Length: 298
Image (tube, rainbow, N blue to C red):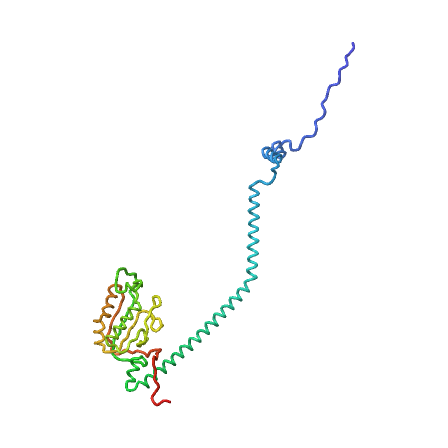
């Protein structure tokens, strides 16, 4: 019996070595395909359209960063220049201060010289009035303000209204063009002084400044000037004369009534008191209008 030969059984080739990370297939897939497919597609599309480059937001951030760097450089450069120029500016400032101080000291010295010359001239004028007044020398010196004077008289204190509040309505001062603020004005002081002279005052002073027949009472803004010297309220007016008659005649006069109107309408404060002895200084400056040579002088 013959046997039919059988082909040898087929054997598959031996399998190759397995991957060490075969058990981590998910992680392997993520690592191998880390680039998102949609992002890759978008990048490919931009590359095809020729618009490859940085995203707009990144470009904006880079531009902002560049601007900040530039600003920092400018500030740093400015600070460096300031440090360099600071000593020069300080030196110029010191020189300017020195010049101002020197000019101020010079002006103060000139002012002192002027005051000294004024005092010398006033003294010589007073002596001349005493010597050449004849039998009436003392009276001339008194009336001209060349000498100090004291005796019974009147003390009148005038002050601004409390708070100097604006007042509305008409009044004796409305036509002058000044706003009625409750402050004592130069024209008010003029009327007070003229009223005292008319009531019989022999000598008058305001805040220690002796008045003469040539004294001027003016205004500079809200300030009152007597012979170009400013006064500060309250104003103390002293008058030498018969205290009883002086007080009565002044308060009954038109100017005395004017002072009462100022008190009622504008709140200006004043008080009048009789004094047994008031002292008035000599006038600080006298003006001689005319002069005659002494008889017998060559």
